[in-house]
Amino acid sequence: MIKVDTYKYIKDLHIRERKSIRQISREVGLSRQTIRKILYQSLEDVTTYKR
Image 1 (cartoon, one colour):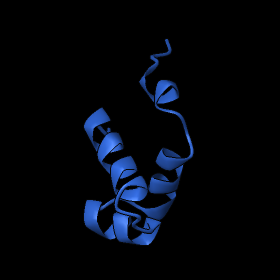
Image 2: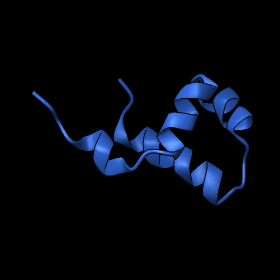
Image 3: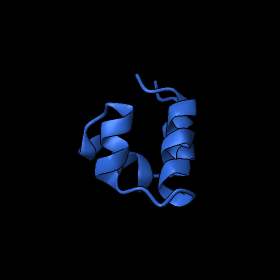
Image 4: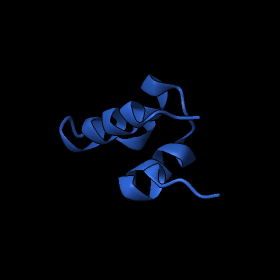
């Protein structure tokens, strides 16, 4: 499971440092599809828990 800190770190890399999805994928160690899902989905959707 990916922690909320990792979500913020990935979004900061993409927005502030203007890194591409491939560069972030190499640095963090997650797949490009996972990085893409994190970037294009809101953080509120991620942090809500469903039973």
